[in-house]
Amino acid sequence: LFTEPLLANGAPGSWNSSESGHPGVFVDGGRTYLFFQGNNDNGRTWYLSYVPLEWRNRKPALLHR
Image 1 (cartoon, one colour):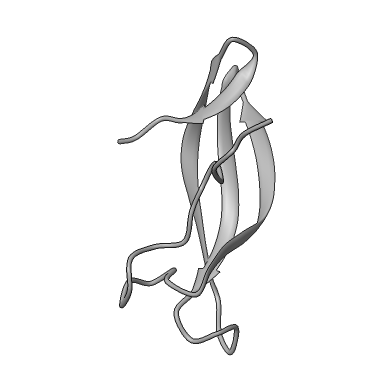
Image 2 (image 1 turned 180 degrees about the vertical axis):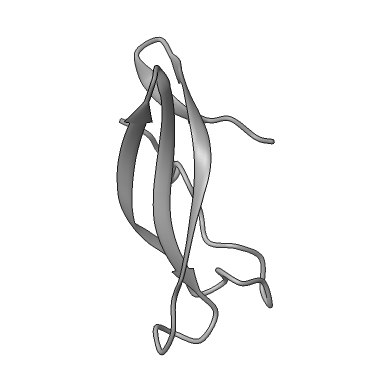
């Protein structure tokens, strides 16, 4: 589907520098969100976050806030 990840890990030192994974898609009233977990300590802890998605040519794209 893509040659690069839809959501890459964060920059070194950021909250998701070790991982941005375990995605799930949630649809709410026509809006779509990508939920995912991230961490910066090689998996010892984790944080949950989300980003809004939009659809371009029937493919998901991150909608940057």
